Amino acid sequence: MAYSEGDILLDATVPGANLARLADFSAGTEDPNPIHTDEEFAKAAGFPTVLQQGPMTTAHFARLLAERVGQDRLRWLDVTFTAPVFPEEDLKIEAVVTAVDGEAVTCALTASKGDGTVTAKAEAGFGA
Image (cartoon, rainbow, N blue to C red):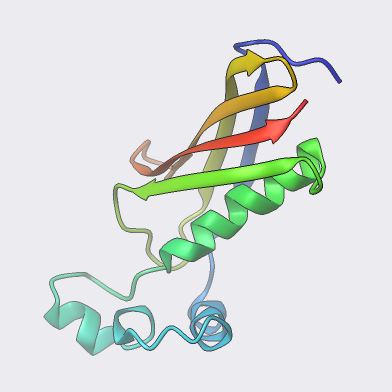
């Protein structure tokens, strides 16, 4: 497929994770940080409840991109987290092509909450 700057690659909503899924993700990634599983700990740290793991958002980006462009073509993904995600918060995942250079395509991604708060920004590259 030919890509052009400005092409929309993704515009999807990912359902929010519940507490059990956050606990499973922490166990599966061997993430010992109690801020993802212990509500009292999260509250003591100044949050209203536990936080979704950043790598879960990264996994959403990678999965959706791989489904869209093919997993064998995805080359790199660089993510910056900008705001916390709490349990049950859906994320809108968007990606747009920002550059095409021969066989190399670069895109910008965002994850945002229903209120528009951007929770993560990323850049990814894949082969055309």
